[in-house]
Image (cartoon, rainbow, N blue to C red; front, top):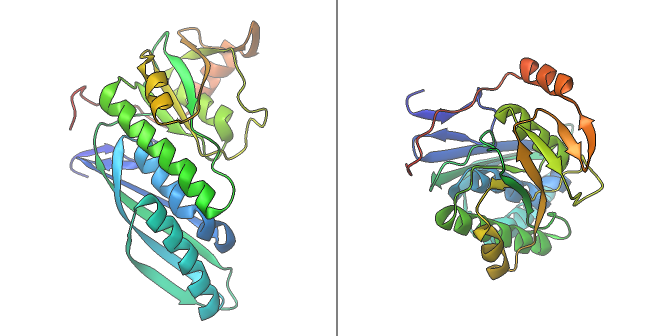
Length: 264
């Protein structure tokens, strides 16, 4: 694909073609997708360094009433995060599982890979876990989105990733493997290592991110420091040693993107 910067080979949060960013998520069970699916799909657009523009959905419901009720909730998400649903498809088949998928398009501001951790970067977790009713999720997501987009305009973010499937620790490990780095973890923000959280991991040397987070009233917590030693330390204890890291690197199928420093 011409101008493909991030694709399947990168395994990042979204696909980037020239200055456009695309992400598809699902199928979600309808009860989950109607509450949070569009928010989570949009979250991957933002963490790649892009402003979300619009989305599509594809819904499967047991009957028209179920489809209409779900559409009302999806509209609440859409209106709340300002990502209009401009098209899609709905079908009603009672003998199939009710589900929904989303596709969101964004415009690149500055590409932020998940594979560019640098030695002595600090790793932060940004935002609250996306939980609760639709209104609560929208509020938390908007705060995180606005804060992160402000950060990429005003500071130097080396890498970032959405804490989705695999939880904060699983996604942090993926960043380390892709970047061929280690970490000393000095703070554990959540004891549920693999829970789907929906906040962001960011890697930077720029402590201006703390001031920006404070301005937006967005929670930010330092997790640890990136090292060139291929191991994961929690305090002084080695949790994942060099041999295991090298084994994971050897088996990992993804490749780093080739990006220029300047904005697209």
